[in-house]
Amino acid sequence: MPESPNELRKTTDWTILSHELFNEKDDKGELVKLIVPNGHDIAGSHIRFRIKWTIDSSDKEPADKEWKEGHFIERDVQFVDEGKVLVYWKELGGRDGVSGIPEDYCHVLRILEKGKKTKRGMVKYKLQFVGYSAEKSEVEHWSREELKYNFLELLAEWEDKDG
Image 1 (cartoon, rainbow, N blue to C red):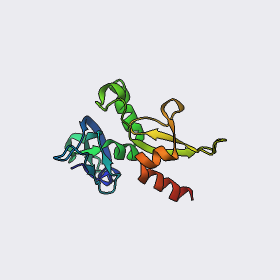
Image 2: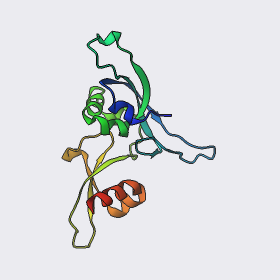
Image 3: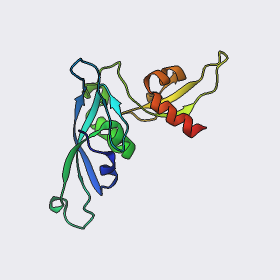
Image 4: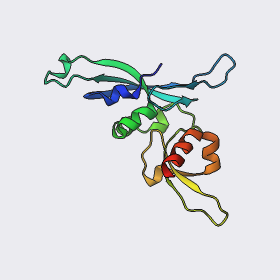
């Protein structure tokens, strides 16, 4: 079971050691939804980072501090420190080539903005994906229907916040 992202929020120092692809299924081959305490639930192919962390804020040398290791879901880690996640993937040559996530599979990290209605009455939402930055070249626009079908909880959070 992955660690709660609250563990990372309490740390004084942490580092991503490695990553692993997970795709939890039940006995019938159906995707299992993981309930993550203090994090976002997730189902299907996803990355878990193996992370080393400490809550020791003393002046001790790093080697003398008490360190823990555990697995955290990538999405939750990106919410804690997006920069560390993006640097990790960049140092490996890019997430696409090394993550093992199927090309046609994605997890939305956040809705960045709601677009204006088109002449046909459709609204598109600007999205940022897990493992990627919010730069223009790495975002996509999805309709409310696509979001509602694939990421209902995220859409509901946005609509509650947006009013």
